[in-house]
Image (cartoon, rainbow, N blue to C red; front, side, top):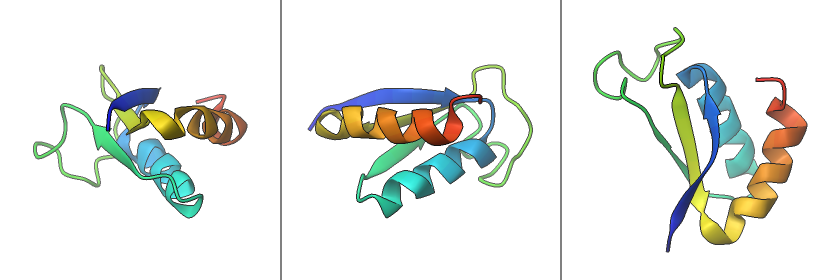
Length: 74
């Protein structure tokens, strides 16, 4: 199983919303950011590096379609 980054978000709030949207479609994902464990999961401030959303390679295309539809302007 190879994880690929499908989108970078400015903060955890948007990233967690996207993760929940993918979960509803049966697509498992994980978040990665420098704030994990430092600012806590509820941090809503923007981060210079943002928050990366990863999915398994086999779900990448479907995840991209969902994220583009829901979060294209973010």
